[in-house]
Image 1 (cartoon, protein in one colour):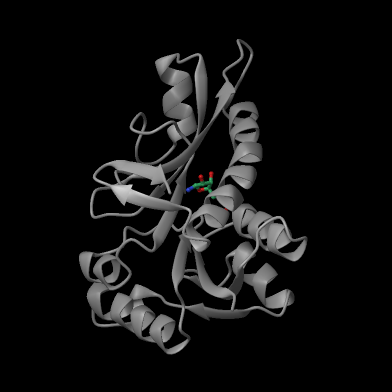
Image 2 (cartoon, protein in one colour; image 1 turned 90 degrees about the horizontal axis):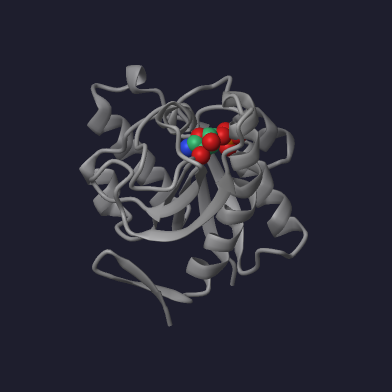
Length: 202
Ligand code: GRF
């Protein structure tokens, strides 16, 4: 049976759409997007999910006593639905330890840099400002360390002399859309395991 995925997003949702497309076309197998969650009711990615007939839910911290209560409500919904994998795709909230523990080893994130370089916000601008000659994206397991979990896979792109933030972001994003689906295919089929910091093929 297809493993159930929840996508958490806050914005545009191009990674979500790429994954949805790749599941639809059979490039990613063995899983289905069960629900899309957002902290923003007007996130374009959330609206796109709804238009596609995928279940959606909005969890805004201000509607709960605190961040912990909000994330507990998310966990409850995800458990009720039997969700097995959490895919963070431009989710602009740092998840608390209780949420991460509830899905230990089953939360993935994509970050637009070659980690461990340039963690946090505006990674592509950080890369340009630093002057690196290659950049890229990283799909990693989520732990309590920001952008610091074991790395599933990375894609490299060149940084060109005339790049600005927009052109570099676009080149990296193209690879993100490939990388996230490849990573999902690996985890859903149990093709990898975590050994300390290393993610190894079985
Ligand atoms: C991507 O660049 C991703 O790496 C970062 O947030 C952005 C989300 O883009 N975590 P989108 O909403 O998937 O288009």
